Amino acid sequence: MSRMRQIFSAAGDGSGDSALNIDGTTPTHFFVRPETGDKMKVDAIVLTIEDGATWTSATLGGMTAPSNGVALVHRNELTPFAVHETIFTGLVDNNQFLLSDWEVQTFLLDSGERMGRITIRFEKGMEIYLDGLTELRISIADDLQALTSFQAVACGEII
Image (cartoon, rainbow, N blue to C red; front, side, top):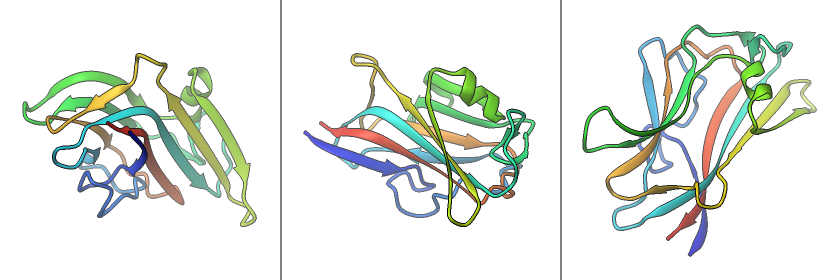
């Protein structure tokens, strides 16, 4: 087994568009899928938000809280709408990070912008397994272009 880190992307393999700070008023999806023949065990997902505006508990980064937010699901890609597990849905503000049991770190960058790193860890035995039939999907259903950057990475092992 080897450790892996794969960025959520429109292609699902880490290539292509991976910036989540998009105009998602038409819902847009970003994926993590294993390569053909591989299987993944995901034990953490890291969300990184960077923004120069003032952060409060009622904003997402420093932008006004969106109405629909961000969702993360583990789903079967061969059966439309078949969701194995909803990890979170309707994530709209920083307060939701603070009230969760996720690890939250914030940093003040040299540029004066603030960066937040949110780590969602899955306890031993609760990891997410991906094969050729399943994927992790982040859905953006709002305009998040006001954020300087927003990315997500799945961490784990190729098994």
